[in-house]
Amino acid sequence: MAAPGHPFGDDYRQRRSDHQVADDRAKVCEQVANLIRRRTDEAFRRRFFASLQRRRDDRRDLHQFEVVRVPGSTETLVVRNELLMRTELADDRRIQDLLRGYRLRRDDDLDCEELEDRVVRYRGGDTNARGLHDVASLLRRRHGAATVNHVVPLGPIGKGMAGPKPADGLPPFPPPERGDPPSPRTVVAVIDTGIDRTLRGDDWLANVRRRDDNIDPLDVLPDHGDGYLDLGAGHGTFAAGIVQQVAPDAEIRMYRALDSDGVGSDVAVACAMVRAVKHGAQVLSLSLGTQTLDDRPPLGMEVALQVIRRLERERGQDVVIVAAAGNSASTRPCWPAAFRRVVSVAGLTAGLTPSGWSNYGFWVDCSTVGEGVLSTYVEGQEALELDLDPDVFPPDAWARWSGTSFAAPQVAGGVARLCMEGWPNPRDALRELLRRGRPVPDFGRAFEILPGV
Image (tube, rainbow, N blue to C red):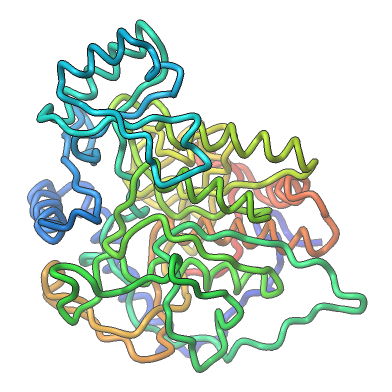
């Protein structure tokens, strides 16, 4: 029987030399310091957001956003000139007259058939994000659900100086052990920046299907590429490698909801969630999240969870959704992790103590190691724009990275592993995984799956 806090015993122990340990520890200490710095250094955040917006100028195919300062907290990003509401509200003639006064036009094409009969988007006009938020608040008080379209970034938005660091990798991926008869493969959907198009020479992630709509382009910003890795490049590949380490026999499917700078929207993430479940995913892993202007849940994801619940009832099969709690050292809810329906995962140090940069609070369900996690990365060179000491990553790269983004896929992989070990219902597997943890105030059930540094 595994000791409390170690649900899989020593199954994932990584043997490293003293030199490797010392080198990795120095890199991870730098990452952790910069995670904390990003929260406290307003000048750095201003430069970063200005750079992020500048990189997107004149790109109509990408989300343009505003940065809104929330009193007593850090910034929230909002898609420019967009308002979301439920369809029944948008069909009200009085609402249509009101929104015409703001020069907002109805756009029924969300590019997402799963939500188009439930959510309507209004676009245009010149009202800023604060003004649109006030309009949404008025509509909610008098009529029903409406909200701005929040930007849903990666757990740590943009790598900057808290990005991945090159590290010695694991041996080549071994052939799956399916048993006789083979156990059913649990399907894990990783909703992120997508997967690297290039097949690795060490066979890691070789069985993940590449499609035109789930490829991480790595370098398309600014101006269709500059020879350097974009600010969110490789994030999805890293998360997928974590799932495969924990659950080697799981079937990993990649869904791209964020661009290669790590920026998506409430609607884009919601669509990917529903699409993944419709295609048979049993576990969803989301290393992304947003804090909203009023701490209310984003409308798109709220509706997506309702659709997923209906699909569960129709199929008689539960789906476990796992999401990163965020890296703001805050108790404010980070969505989708803060939904009661979603398993929220906070970050721990390698010694299983709470990380100083991790979000926490009553809404956090569990936590696992989020500092110095080792996983698969991509080939390329970081840009000088935000890191004056950029790293260069070779083919078949491995890296160490820190953040709740890299704690969440461990939990998703742990659920998948238990499903294939005899808990056929993912919800039962989750309960078993949580049972093997130990309680930590404001960090839920804490445990180590993959080791950190």
